[in-house]
Image 1: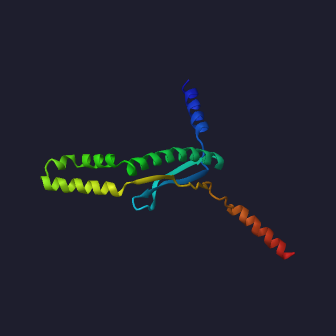
Image 2: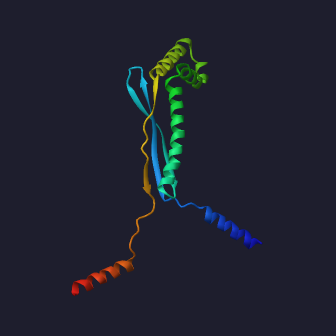
Image 3: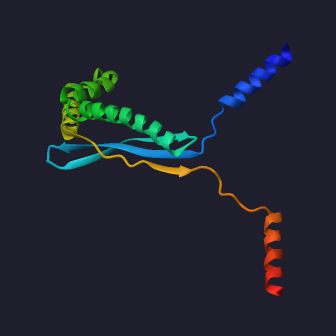
Length: 161
């Protein structure tokens, strides 16, 4: 009974193990336009997926790219199109400090936070096109020493004749 369980466990691990032979990588970024009407590109995430075949790895990373592009777009809107949210989150970060500051210092901190958030405001333009780069993880097949020796012998015989 124990042997049967061990064999079943071994087979399940052996069969379920997928040998990754291809690695596909992509970078997701988004564009936004700031108050000075300049387009700015912002890096969002690097994605890596592996698969037994190149097409499967590309399909897997393609699905992940779509999800990350949606997240990037949402993040862009939160960061660059939500002035009150930016001010609120930054002031919350200083919550413990604000109570100990005097009126003038608190006023300067609030002005600084507002100025910083205004510089980050703009309009989101969407995500940048993504280039998927795949590479083969299998090591190149090298000839063994025996095969190399056999080829050398054949070459020498061919030259003697």
